[in-house]
Image 1 (spheres, one colour):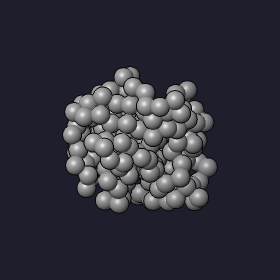
Image 2: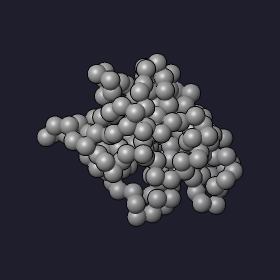
Image 3: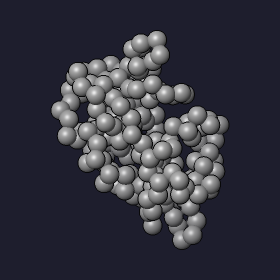
Length: 169
């Protein structure tokens, strides 16, 4: 079962789950970046087994500011993987994407999941709008995926993310 909840109603077990799944590769800042939007929670009976969130961000592309539904903290307990939970979490969040100009996420893993759901790799260069100005984020090139919405996109063009603490993408 998938349940959608705002951050205000998020059970503390969600953070515990995400931290356990990502182990040492998930910081307090990463958690903060996943808050403030809608969370999809996957349950096996009463047990919380998966989490993903959708937060609003601003992306710059083609001379326009885009409202992006940005996917964060997709995590499924190891003993529940390959059972469709991640797909169900994504499906729940994707139903919310028509409220945004574009869907976006950064993926180091689970790329086949996202591509299989219609997410497209951003082929162009990536940037971040930092306090010092626009800065190139070469390390993120190839790892950003988008789900086109109402805004026209050139997947080979520049894409700039708004500034935030921690991982910009």
